[in-house]
Length: 196
Image 1: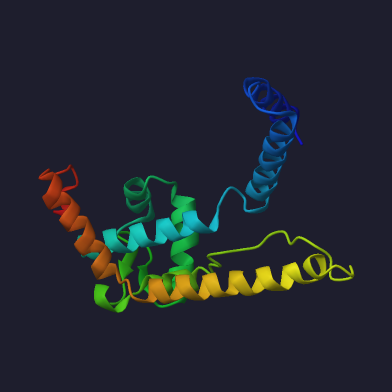
Image 2: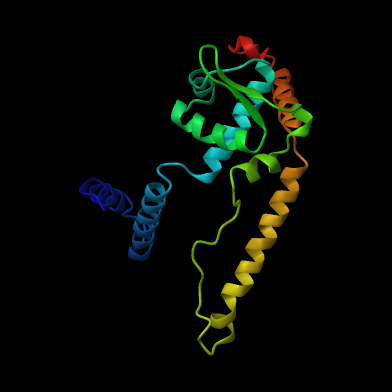
């Protein structure tokens, strides 16, 4: 762990003087886990890729044009490298088309009513709910200690199934309809001319 992160952890621990020592240790452990996870994912989390993909597909559909990665990145508020990484996965799944060279970029490949959020999640190989740690030990004689990891795995599997079923019912068209409803409710024009 870098000195900078250690110093940050110390500062954070000092700010939490109202908490117990156990809470501080827990906070430091969580910070360490987040830092390790951040490094493993090269700064990307599964959920951020999913948000980038949904945002990009809605923008591409509403734009009805071929959009360069730089313009798409600007709209999504990320960098073009992240856009290209995510768009490569969406292209492989047949959700977008690409055009090389001058005037090149990305274009949505299907009708907005034919693309579900489940298809996007699958294209990104997204596991929505993960159990990164399991309590207990299957070799212990205690019923709870020996069986809890199996029960938790079953719960996580069920949660993933429920999430995927939910995402299957939501299309890019429905996301756009929700955005339109929000805009009408606020009665604002916004600043994105290509989306109006």
